[in-house]
Image (tube, rainbow, N blue to C red):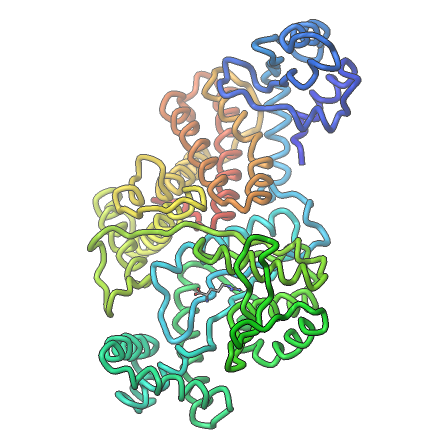
Length: 563
Ligand code: ARG
């Protein structure tokens, strides 16, 4: 969706540039990097051939003919300066009409986006390592909802395979007391699992025992299945507790085991389509032609593998949800796995293979000893979140001692969690990131608290003002800058959707908050020179409030009107 302003300019330009359509022109219009260059600009480079002139000569010619707004040629661009009132009224009336829908679009209407994210392995609590998939996935889901898609959030829990045998073996060896596991929850299972790993390093027979227990599970042995179900229940209770804290919900918890009985058909189909090849006893799909190692379908003992399950799951998801996009938010280290099995579905003749989208992300390191860990080397997500809330509570104590105990608690939770989420989402997805408390909790800039604080600031001015009459009167560049940034929000949402990149929203929020804070600092609002200017500035605050609020929602941060 192109903003109305761009469309208006494009329509007027189209009368002069007849070789391009209005849509093409609108798509080429840019925002100049500096407000002194105007509000919008149109690059003439692509026209050089058709016009047989230099881009700047073309820009000059068109600028001279353009009457809708002041236009000037510079360096091959035409820069348009929009009349303040026209520009501001156009944008603000849009924001006030759409409020919490400002920036939303209907490009996904009638379409379904399935998003597989978080997807931890069972019998373990969530670790810091799950933060990225969980939050990037959640933001991508919300961005798609905002763009009109129906979304299906899937938690594809890793609940099958030899690790499940190992945990059963460890439980039988060192616990065998379901009451204890029920009481201590998944942390007891983690302890057993960590212990098993350590002991197995010197005692190979343990791994054999683990395999035996998995075989029991596969064969449907009563005890094995009963325990496994119980462990699953206990695992899900704990992960749901954390998802609750993060404000995340899933539509489906169909994990790997759900596809156990659906893989036989996949193997048959691969055979029928002549795609399977015997290789050292294993069944593989040869991907040499596509410069990839073979995709393993069946081990020599007939056991299915991770790719086999993903193929079965994708076929099932298409049948069940008829998706237009089938998105996977997973660690970059699984790039080859996804490339391989998606290729296999393409070779099977499924057209939807093109709509399977792997969205990888880089690793997140949490510096040194920033948190207490309860067990082994696992840095628990719960610990990180708790610590974040504690740290913000301390800061609140100094910053705003007047807040009541309940309010403080509420703000500390929203801002503490927000700090973690934002610092993790603000960098482009594929980058490895280093989480530091200094950055995450920097209330002065580039952080979640900074954005939440700015939102609260806008709310508080509006609250103090009581009612006001909306009108617009732009008096300076600080106000102009805000208007310009507000107008860009709908396009930023579309970029985030197209590129599966929540960081676009984060960076946008930082820009608009910085502009708003400069304005807030330099331009008196409640004590403005005149009633007209005061009302206009309040209208800006309100527009910023909606826009920043919508941005926060998209990235899964809570709003707070107090900090
Ligand atoms: N459970 C896997 C892991 O922890 C991630 C699953 C990603 N989703 C998928 N459909 N393969 O690494």
